[in-house]
Each structure stands twice: as C-alpha cells, then as structure tokens.
Image (cartoon, rainbow, N blue to C red; front, side, top):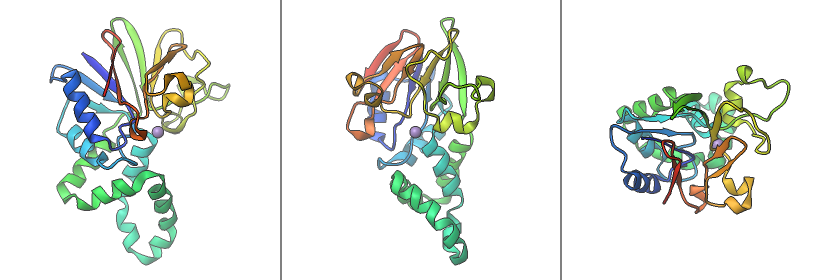
Length: 226
Ligand SMILES: [Mn+2]
C-alpha cells in the first residue's frame, strides 16, 4: 500500500499514532510531503525515524530546506563577525518555528546530527508515481498557474514555496497532491480534513495547529485521521 501525509511540523506523537493506525509495514511505502520540522517539539525525532527506514520518503518543504541549510551552518553563529551577518537569517527562522528544531539539534550527538542532515539531503523536490494506472505528482506545493511557470520549468522554490491556484485544473493526465497550506485556508468547510477538487488533493490538515493529522492511502483513496 502507498500512503501520503504532510506537514508533521514536529508532531511526533500524532505521526506515531498514525503509523499504528495505518499499520505501516515494510511492504508499504510512505511519502511525507514536506515540513517535518519546526513549530512542534519533535521534528528531528521524526527525521531520525525516517533515517532508519527505507520505505519512508521525504519530499522537502520550505521548513525542511531552511532547517537543513541553517543547521549545517550553525557554527557560523559562534564566530562573532559571521554572527552579525547570519544572525538575522537565523533569527528569522527561529521566529518562524525554527526555535524548537534548533533546541532539538543542540541535544543530538554528532552521529544523529549527521543522520538528520542526510534525511534532508536525500529528500526529493517532487516525485511522480503511478498507482492503479493513475499518475500522481507529489510535492510540498506547486506555483500559481501563469505563462512563465510552465511545468517543465518549475524550480525548487516553486515546489517548496509556491502558492497554488486551488480553483484551477493544472493537469488532466495527473493528480497533484500537496501539503503546505492547511486545508481550512483553502475552504473552511475542509477544516481538519483532506481537500479534493480540480485534480488536486491537499493533505495538510493543520495537525500542528490542533487539527487532525490526515493520511491518504492511494491504493483505494481511503482517508485516515488521528
Ligand atoms: Mn510549508
């Protein structure tokens, strides 16, 4: 079975509860569509869990990208001259939820630090998969539709920070699955639920904001919530 979830944002407990609920085995495959870290307390615990599995794949989100770059360069803050230059970049991240991630990182030993950085490095920008003859484009997000944003030319930034047009049909031959935007912001009636329309499925139910964590099984499109 193939499962997708997204925007765990450090909610390890909900993640663990979901894995139990769907009873993920080694024959199954799970794609996490970005933003495992920041805001919630245990994003790096999730990264370490992923690093120990070969059937869980991370598709990177803006928070994962930001964390990966800054954690790898955390030493810059110790140098006084450098900290003038990089301090503001770190501060911006810390105030956007990075404070919990950096706190966790400092507690890790060198080996675990390497493991989490490797999870980010090995993450996909986007991934197309086929299930039951249907093609799915998995990504943290997609850019708005316009002339300059032709699919073949979408950039990493488009896939991690884009603002999708949920009212538009992007593709007729594939279904987009994204996270990034809590579904209640797409349609308040979808609060805490998976949203589907226009060949687009949005699965960030806003778990870190007190809503459910959603998970979708692509084999039969069954939705799971914890
Ligand atoms: Mn995001």
